[in-house]
Length: 325
Ligand code: ADP
Ligand code: MG
Image 1: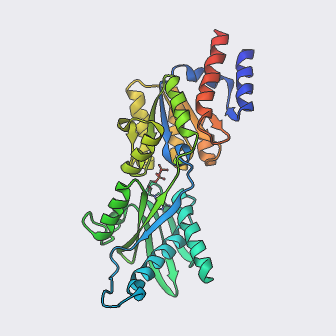
Image 2 (image 1 turned 30 degrees about the vertical axis):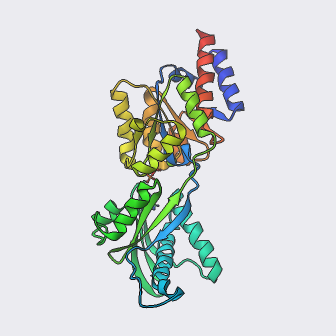
């Protein structure tokens, strides 16, 4: 029979928006000493916004005087945003939503709509691709990491190329940035910003007080990840960046192999396998604002998407277990 205290504990948690799959899960919190936090959507709001559209390779027509001098660049920038948004409309990723939203409001000003796409394909942790009908001209468009574009034979995506350099600069500034390519050549860069949730720093301080060491895990670039880590008080040595979706699971396994008992908090499709793995010895916690796949893979759902519910869940469990002992 389930001890009454466990039922009371899970009931108390539920009132606070912490859904625990079964009372036996409380037992798992006892040994947890490490907490792995997904960045986008868990520590940050996951509502990215487009910051900039860069088209560094556009010819600057210096011989034209005045405002018209930039026309070529502006046309290319508009095309970069339009074609990227057309493909991204097939994706639910926060990067995709930001790009589509920005392009839609730009299009509304001119009464235009996003061009149609065929053959959309999503490449988790890498980017998206599809063929866009650009006013009658079909264009094979890719949006994503430069290394992934280079693997697809895109020219101008090498480390020393202009577009890649612009991408690198944006990343060094702590932005999330993707490269847009079509017809085999890199054309532009889109930079995005995401805000750390107001409650994340406090949540992480509370987790530390409970004796847990926080780690930050993301597919995003290192500078963007370290910027977030600095804002919430995570040691840069505990930042794991540029981790491909299929590697997130291995990150949790590695920590477990080092003898750590891991809790993980995530929200994405990409996090599901790692969340389930954390739950085998420790705990998987999903943001209720995240994907169903992450919720299904987890032991605990933090309904409100407030990271402070993670330390609360652990406190309730520990208190409950003390009552039983
Ligand atoms: P996170 O761990 O932050 O959720 P992901 O693993 O989903 O990140 O993505 C990692 C990286 O892959 C992104 O920073 C981006 O460079 C690229 N990427 C993923 N999805 C997309 C997309 N829809 N469009 C463009 N780039 C993408
Ligand atoms: Mg996420």
